[in-house]
Image (cartoon, rainbow, N blue to C red; front, top):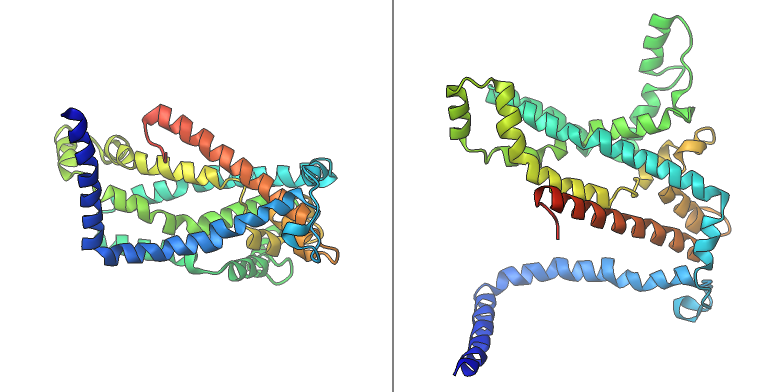
Length: 317
């Protein structure tokens, strides 16, 4: 009898699921649109990754090109550019994570602590605006401001130092700082939105009880607000670590010049130059480098997700 009951329960459960799907089929139809998009533009092109293990020839196509195994990866690992682009990518990525990840949290805590709603809205609007500046415009602003002859910073430098300012945009040592802190300024306000939303769910009775007990505003931020957004911060940290090797191509490429190439050449710009930027292109070699970069990101997101899950129980999977 128990066996028969189990056999009957499964179809009934499936029937209930199908009934729920058909009852709101419009929502599932909307869900189908992004799924088709992901399949066509994200998973479909993954069939082309096989050229990383081939000597791609346009005349033979992806499927007809001869297999060469891991020769493309070996070529990259033995190249003199391997150490340079890997070092530059890791430095810029870790620098961006260390400098950029806490800043939205700090900004959200500060904005949440403001007593005046009007001042809070003005501050939020001002900090959000830089996010909507395009990368090309942002690099143009940097170039104009740091121009050693007519730039704003150069004029101030001339007034206070009574000498000509060096060309900062052409300095290899200045590139990581310019790249990271301009990105922090641009995205800090927008990235704080999710933390402000998480802080809005804080129970007001916790703050009232803490005030009765004599807790200062700073103590309430540390012991109430910060633990509230900690789960959200953990998830975003995992996601950021999954993209740790993905240094933005557009910004790095636009900030490059012949002088700062020693520190500005990262994996994304090198892949572009190898695959499309040179007169002699090598699609297989560029694909192998990009696949290596993606594998490192996959390993990082798995490792960080495992560590975070063991420390505080928050994880993506």
